[in-house]
Image (cartoon, rainbow, N blue to C red; front, side, top):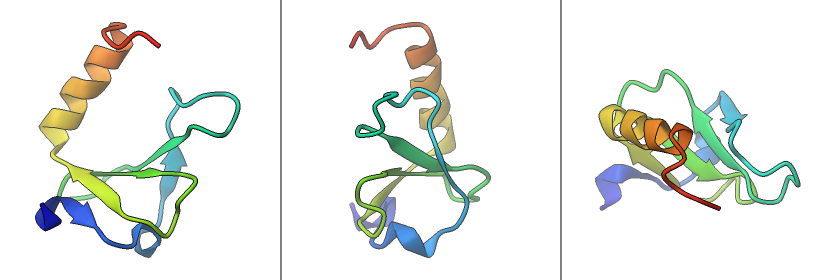
Length: 73
């Protein structure tokens, strides 16, 4: 699965916190927009840890499902 991971997420710039992350600040997902090979996703608590690279079409489907409320808290 190494082709779908970025070993050190801090190597990328432009991370932004997801608008769907918790308001408490502890459970935050960050993404990089406009990455040509998919959507990098990381845990904000581990900025130097790995990031997953999700294919753009899969990420779009996931975000649409979240917006529809398909993943109850």
